[in-house]
Amino acid sequence: MLVLDKVHKGYASGNRAAPYTPVLKGVDLTVEKGEFVMIMGPSGCGKSTLLYILGTLTMPTKGHYKINEQDISKLSEKYRERLRLGHFGFIFQNYRLFPLKTVAENIEFPMAFMKTPKVARLTKTGMLLRRVGLEEKAKAFPDRLSGGQQQRVAIARALANDPEVILADEPTGNLDEATTHEIMELLRQLNGKGVTIVMVTHDTALTKYATSVYTLNNGILSLTSAATSVVCI
Image (cartoon, rainbow, N blue to C red; front, top):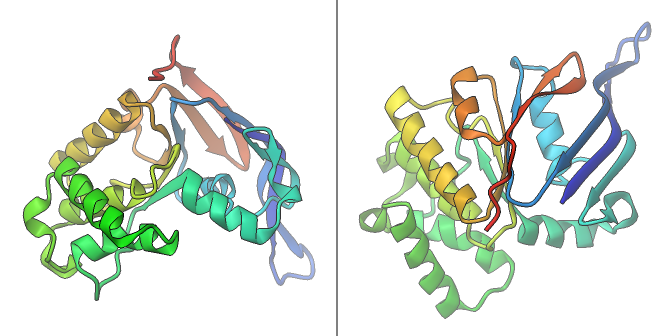
């Protein structure tokens, strides 16, 4: 379970008259195991900042963030790094694949970082390639793939260390409508198997995939809609 309690985040502006630019203003959010949470809002409203706090990529300026009742501010950076690699899988709009690594090597990378044995890495990579339908692309490089294929690789990589939570930052922002549907169906299947998903987007058409929908506006997060039950297997 992820819990944000009155979380603020701001950055130095370099402006003497207003030296501090607030991005998040007292955000409260609880994400239960098995939810598919969608956070809506226009570009530049702080959605990515909120997602990066959830993934411990950045820390709140004020307030508290707990993962399974552990206060993140009380953990060392080394521990947060291992928690980040083992607990979360990240999917980004621009894929962030390594251009000089093959598809298989991109998927294998997080496991190598966690010192997973080579044989286990290869076995898991093969399984993930089958899961996202890219077995025949294992030796291809990212620049030989379509946008949808690259995002499937990114999803497979996000699953490499069996994360409890996937954090997706505009994962369909660069995709056409048909490919967007394919990627969202893949995420829905993962959610149906018990993977918690938190996704930020500005595309209102995607809210049908979520169990809970929030809107972030002017640094304030509000609940827009919630399902009556949560899928949790």
